[in-house]
Each structure stands twice: as structure tokens, then as C-alpha cells.
Amino acid sequence: MPDVDNRGGQGACPRCSRNLRYLGSATEVEPFWNRIGAFFRYPFHTDPLMVIAICTLVPLALSANLIGLVVSLLLAMALLKYTYAVINHTAEGHMAPPPVTTAFSGEGFSIVFLQLLVFIGMGALVTGAAMLGGPLLAMLALALVVLTLPASIMVLAMERSALAAINPLHLVGLIARIGWPYFLLYGYLVLLTLASGAAQDFALTHFSPWLAGTLAGFLNSTFTLILFHMLGYLLFQYQEELGFASDLQDEEGPQETSQRDPSQRLDADIDMDLKDGHYDRVQGALISALKKDPDNRQRLEQLFRLLTARNDNRELYRHHIALLGWLADTHNGAGVADLLARLEPISPSLKLDDPELAERCARCLYHQGEYRKALALLQDFHKRFPDSHSLAPAYVLAAQILANGLDQWEKAAAFLGFVKKRCPNHPLHSQVDDYLQQVARREPLKGPRATFTISD
Image (cartoon, rainbow, N blue to C red; front, side, top):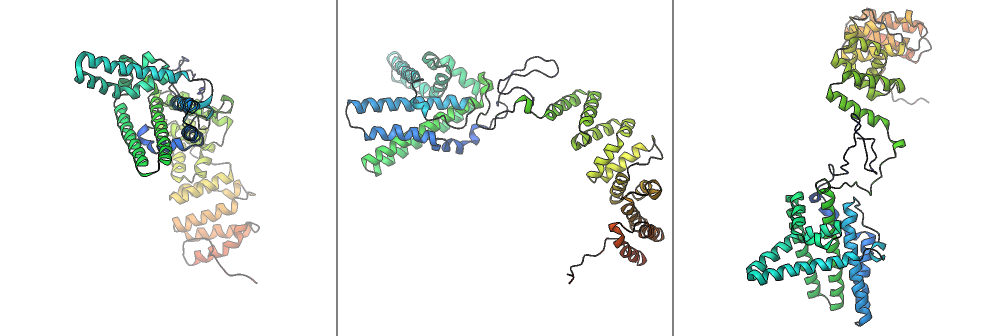
């Protein structure tokens, strides 16, 4: 559907005009396991780096008092708010991070309190399991909570509801719709968490407390952004299964309808009509397109292939001038020979009225080895086009065909003599003597040998 409104997610079927369901990038998005490198580069864009720097370094510079505690808590909330913005931003198709102002604007902090409620609910679930069934049931409940935590984060980011984020039916439903890739992502997240913990432990062990705290905070924030970006991308990748549609937003936007290439719509219609067997409709569309753009090589090729496949020789005859011109332009000697063979029953004595086209087609046939067909196109060339600039190259070509292809040296010499006598002002005239010498020696007629002599 090359001409629908991608930005508005609207489009109508070109056959029945019914509204289509928009799929966004669901059918062409790259799987997340092919983008691991991009995930790790994500936090090192300018905006997330600024958020990480502010939320990590500022608390370390504050005094250990009530004001420092409040500011540190607010910055932690801003970082958590930014990570949820990363999920939504990525799920909408933005592969570039959200701006730094997203973390510190006055809106959206409710997600922090919702996340706190989710953690309280999960803790209550594990505690209740311990009270009812002892340590074994508590361990099972904890394992379930850990397994569904990524799904809970995604549900909370999409629905902004703490109840939905701890509802087992919602979580299991999300995991079921995504399928096995959820568990693959879960494995990546586990490795990511272990790597983050190991890096922070190394920093705390080998560096001074102030530097270790800075590095640990930076690493924790960085790995958190990577994790949340991966969760958002999983939503984006499985948008169709999850019931929404998004497009890649950071690339060049879709063109406005007035700027779209109408040939894309024609290509799509041709493709559908061919598959449906509506060949007359395809033929009519191609002929109409060629009336507007007679030199369009793509449409000429499509028309030629369609008409030859249908054995519609009469329609080929109607368009043979344009088709022969296209075949000559593409140096398709086999196509020229095939088309002329198809036209022979309809017009046994077919003559081309365009001298340049006749010479070009004859040259294609010569290189294809169709010597007699090439000569037929050049027959009586001097009578039909006595003043044509193509006369000299046409008769030099005829001499090459006779000498190189048919071994008729005397006739080749006659054609060359005609060019020498009748075309004294043509650039080829200076080469005729070389050709005649080659004829005399019964050598294949080629152009004059290159010389690298520099005249004084």
C-alpha cells in the first residue's frame, strides 16, 4: 500500500474500498536479538548521558542532610520517570532517546508511585504465600514474581495501572502473546543484571569510595536504561500481537500524498492484477502510463513482457516503434529478433521509417548474429533516407555484416565505396580507406587502429 496515510494509520483497499487495519512496522521491524549493539549504545547519546550525569553526580556533591536526602530522592524519581519514558518512546517507534527535559518536567511522576505500589503488591504476594504455604510456596511465588517482572514493567508502561501490572492474567496474557522471545529477552536481562552487579562490585572493590560510588551509580543507571530500552523495543517488535501499531519515527517521515510517486501505486495495482489474472487491465494501465511518459523504460519492458507472454502480436505491432527503440537502447539483440519474427506474419515487408532506429536495430541484430535480418532492415537505405546522417554508419555496418558475417567481400567493398563517394562530409569517411584495405586482405572489418603518436 504505497499511497496510504502512514502517519494517520488510515488506508482503503484499492479493490473493495473497505478500511484496512494498519500494521505499522510490525511486519518489517528488525528482531531485537539483531540489535544488541544498538541497545548498548543507547545510553551514550547526549540526552540520556545528561540525565545519568545529573542523577548520579549531583547527589554525591550534596551534603548528608535533609535537603540532600530530598534532592537525591527527587533525582532518583526523575531517573525512574525517564526510564519509563524510554519504554513508551521506544514502543512508539523512536529509536533515539527522549529529550532530557522528559526527566525533569512536572508531568508523569505518577508512574513512580505506581511502580512503588506494584512493588508493594508483589511483596505482599510473596509474604502471603509464605504465611499460607511456608518457605516452599514463598519461593515459588518469588520465582513467579521475578519471571513476570519484565512483563509487569511493560504493562505498567502501557496501561499506567498498578492493578493491571500485578494481575496474573494480564501478565500471563502478555507473555503468551509474545511467546518464546520473551524468555530469550529475559535471559538477556538476567545476564545484563549480573554484568551490572559485577561491574559495580569491581568498582567498589578497586577504587576509592567517592570514585567507586560515582562509577557504581553511573553503571547502574546505564544498565537500567539499556534494560528499559530493550523492553520498549520488545513492545515495538510485537505490536501486532499486542494490539497497537507504530512506525519508525526517527527516520525520514512518510511523504505527503501530494509528494508521493504515483508510479508506486501503479506498480502495486499491476502486481495485484497480474496475480488476479486481470491481464487486460494491466495492459490498459501500461498503455495509459506510456501515453503520459512514452520513454519510460520500465513500462516499455513490462508491456513487452506482457504482450509476448500473451502472444498478442497485433498489439505488439501497434507499439513496435517504441518497443524496438527500448530494445535497441538496452542492446537487446535477441529481443529485437524475437519482436521482428512476431511481426513478420502481420507485416511481411515491414520497413522502419526512422533511419536512426533502423540502423540501431540492425546493429543489435548484427551483434546477435542475425545477419540477414540486419541486412533486411538496411535494404535500400540510400533510397529511403538519401539525406540521413545515419546513411554512412548504416552502410559501414552493412559492409561489416557482409564481410564478417556472410563472407561476401565484394559486396562489402561496394557498400564502402558508396560511403566513400556519397558521404564525403561524414566523420566515418576518413575510416573508409582502412576498411577497404581490410577487405582487400580479407580481414574482419574493424575500426582503425589506435595511434598514440603526438603530432608536432
